[in-house]
Image (tube, rainbow, N blue to C red; front, side):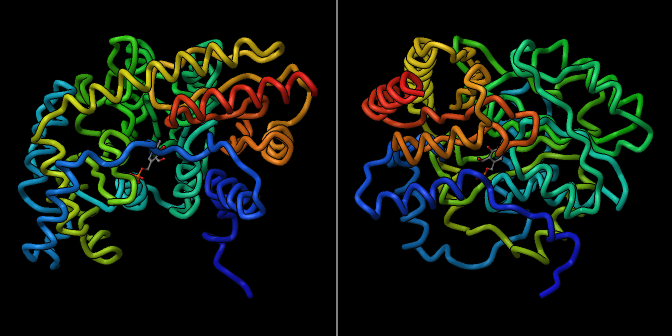
Length: 388
Ligand code: PLP
């Protein structure tokens, strides 16, 4: 069978592929420690679930406007704006089933065939996929460990050109946990203005930042609200990955185009999911704060445990729920190491190269799992690397 060029290079996300293999092993009776998939291990907070259930019971099971419920758009404009020190109006907010449509549809609306798009490598695999589907030219810029996994700005400058249409940022980042510092954001913002490009700022992990820090948003820099698509959602902050709820905030004229793309693709986002989302934003936030404290504890344990393994080096990431240890000294490719860790030690992790070629020499481990599983995972990792 022949398929269009736009889908020929599509690959599964590494996390889903490893999860499938891990489940196969589990079906054969092998106990596996899951450190691969990037989702919170705790349940959606009960008050949020209750609102969703109540909404279904009271008949909120019909179509709603493609850009989302006005009340949710309003709540997001206020909440996301207040947290970043930017003033947004609800017409700029477009709701979608997850954060992914907020990445995908603006890319489709802005990138013509042949336009170049700069994106982080290692980075979330959807970036390269959506650039290719849009017919754009993916231009990866490495994230470097020495810069706490921010861009190498020299390479960034060298890869920027009059052909660049869009720059994709992700802070805090998947897979590295890195947070882009203010000076780098200012550099990138000045470049975007000079070259007249758009910026997608994927801030899905914005609330998961540790050590009392905050992740600054490029949207808050002067003039940047005119050329930034801020993407965030409910999946990570409120443990709502399966509810499918996210959003993009962008200039109104672009929001109208994205709304049309939603109209003709997904139609709209589930009404009861959005009603649960309103509750998530407007009700108590102390549970999110508690979870962040718990993630920080797990991060610290994970980093300490990994750094106790001779030959392995792991930075302390400032955000998200991933660690990205350097395993170069073992002289084995990341994908081979990840495969052997699963098959021989029963620990599911991702290869850095699942996030792009510049991820070679690293593994990604997710610590959004119970402290007991982290301990058992660390024991198995320690033993595995000792015998390597
Ligand atoms: N952006 C990043 C960086 C992610 O890691 C993820 C999910 O893993 C998403 C976007 C997608 O989020 P959602 O599940 O809300 O579509």
